[in-house]
Length: 313
Image (cartoon, rainbow, N blue to C red):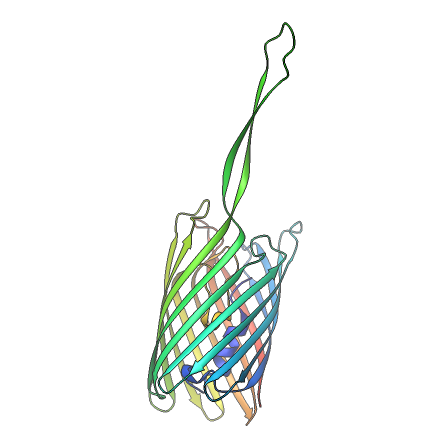
């Protein structure tokens, strides 16, 4: 239903290698997370468990698989909890100075808005070893059951004629739901090594939705992000932030979808990765997001904590 815990912990678990090398390791990640919301928010809590696995086909191609189960509860006792299961499959290629990845994300949800939702993402990266990289991200997601508007339908009925009386006419007006939302997203990324112990990540995203959503004026959202990586002994640290507006965000390799109706304004995330041995690592991550439940509503806050275990083989 929201920013996927899986992506947050993967960023840290893979922090010891540059973005172009993500396809190289073969292994698995198991993670669990919990998110709480401020008193004014309609949501009460969100819990999530996730699994990620990657396996190389050869020296160039790698398959990625991910699945997660999310439960969202609400403060209103009359509102049913939302149960959501999603999965991702992606194929990546890494060559001498170029890498590509194509991913598909599908959602099965008890929420009417998210039923049948899916997304496809394409990522390209050019890199100069461990020194720097620049990339392009394109995502397209579809929500066939997302209510975007209400259409007025007028029905007129005439009574059967009665001798000696004029016919009567009755007009009834109803409103039918108009469903179907398409989201297109374009992003630019860049990373730079700052010596042996630090790295910098930058990003820009532009999101366009079609058609316009009832009660919401904006159809275009833009945001900027920045991150700092640091390495010390067997530890890797990642601090990242974004600002602007995001709606229906689709992450790299289609590993994450912001599958809710909120407009995200800013956020910060911090993770610590401890390499316990040659084939295992433990990550603890914290993130906080500020968002709007409606375009003109107050700012809400969600704060999450997650733990992940990564294994390579």
